[in-house]
Structure formats: structure tokens, C-alpha cells
Length: 349
Image 1 (cartoon, rainbow, N blue to C red):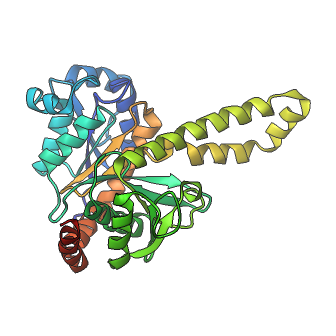
Image 2 (image 1 turned 30 degrees about the vertical axis):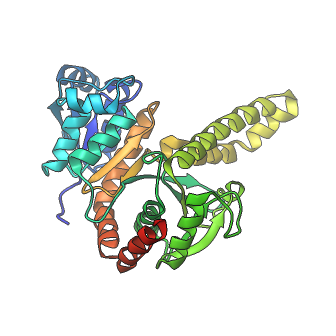
Image 3 (image 1 turned 90 degrees about the horizontal axis):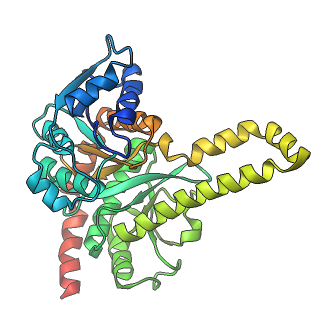
């Protein structure tokens, strides 16, 4: 790819806090020199935030968008009625080749729909899917899908596995990633109809499929990729976020009790900080929507400036590693998928 810095369009109006959080987060990323930032949204609101910081010499520009998709709006209606929304304009920049990627902490449903219809699906991809890097005992595991597709067919999950396997290779440096299917038991006969049929497809694919994995083993780091439908994946991720937060609060409360607890806190301070960073979603920024013609990261609605900065840097790394190109090529040219697709259709008959 050219030596130019990746150009990342940032939905400045997205998230619970809008420009107040998004703009400083984007500026943090701009100061690293890793990307050119295009802030998309209400020019006055964005400039009001930019005026609070020293932005001289930073690779930051502003593109106006007159509308914002509110959290209570239906994605389909927002796409139809708000064609000048910040997320729509940001996706337009990617489609038109004026940006390499887009990130948003706004309405996730609208962002998903807008990215799919505006940026478009990569050749051969039936369903784009959301992936996330889950911290584990060893390093990170890619979990896919975590919310883009609530209802899936076995072949969709097979494609998810292919895309996530490429992601693990390009972004995590895993050779021949171990792929597992999330189920309620390790045995091949476990799971509902979707899981059982998907198991058979994954077993016959060229992926390094190691079988089913139970929820209790997700955080061991024994596999590189975990495949599931978007409903299950979204529940898993939110449960993990909530558990990490609760454990953190419980731990702090216990360590503050009594003299020895406070001494223990002082001795374990560095370890506690490392643990906090490990489970903090702000360290990872956003979830990549795989299977598009361009890069799209969807961030948590409550993202702080640190999370937005991390998302920009992750999007830039996606572009630099040409992860999307490798992913699209794997899906489009994987001969196994064509044969398994026909087999899946025949099985359903």
C-alpha cells in the first residue's frame, strides 16, 4: 500500500458524550502520527472542542454533517430519513475512497446497517460479522459474531470462522489459528441444530477446527478463534464486561478493609494496574465489522477518550496490515467454501 498514513473517518457525534469525548480521543491518536483523522459531524460543535486544544500541525480535518442518528431511532428509518447523518457521511467517505476506515461509538444498529449498505460487502461474503479481541489467561482470543447477526445459518458461521481465522493471523500473528465452536458441551453431538450443523461444516473445512468449546473455557486462551451467532456472542461479551467490572469493584472493596488490606494493596498495586488494563475495553477501542469492502470499527456507546484513541489506532493498523484485503481474498478464493456451501444447501433440503 502507499506510504501515506491511513485516513480514518471518525463519527464525532457518536457515543453517549459526542464531540466532548470523541474529539480529544481522536486528537490523542493524531498525536501518535499513526493516522490522518477526519472528524465528521456538526462543524460548530467539533470546532468548539478543537479550540480547546493545540492542534497545530496535527493531521486533522473536519467534514460537516447536519444530522445525528439518535439512540432511540430505528436503523432502517434513520438510513432512509437522515442521509446527511454523521455516520452516513463518514461511510460515504470510505465508499468514495476519501477515507480508508470509519469508526463510530454511535447507534450500533444504524452503524451496522449504514456500513453494510454504503461501504458494501466484500466479494463472496454473505453476512458481515462483528469480531472482538477477548483478553484471556494467555493473550487474546477472537470471538465472532458478537452482535451483527442474531439469526444465522450454518454456512454463515463457517464464513465467520474463515474471516476470524484471517484476523487472528494478520492482527495477532497466529499461525494456523485454532478455531472452536461455542457450545454447551465439548462433544460433537452437543448443541442446538445450528451448532450441530455448523460443527460438521467446520470439520470438513480447511480451517484448523479443534471442536466445540464451553463457556467456562473461553478465557483459558487455549484457542485462537471462537465462533458463535451474534445473539450468543453479544451476551457473552456483555457478561464478560459486567463480570470484570464487578470483580474489580469487589477486589477494591476487600483490599480497602483493614490495615493489612491496605498494605496488600500497596504491594500489589502494579499487578492490579496490569489486571485493570487487561480487562478494560478502552484498551482495545472497538469491534471490527469483518466482511466489508472497507474498514469499520464499532465502539462502545460509553467509550471514553482513551477508547476512541485506541479505536483509531486499531483501524489504522488494520489498514497498514491490509487485513481486509487478506480477509476478502480468503473468503472469495477459498475453494472449500464453495463446495461446503452447496453441501449445506443440500443438507437443508
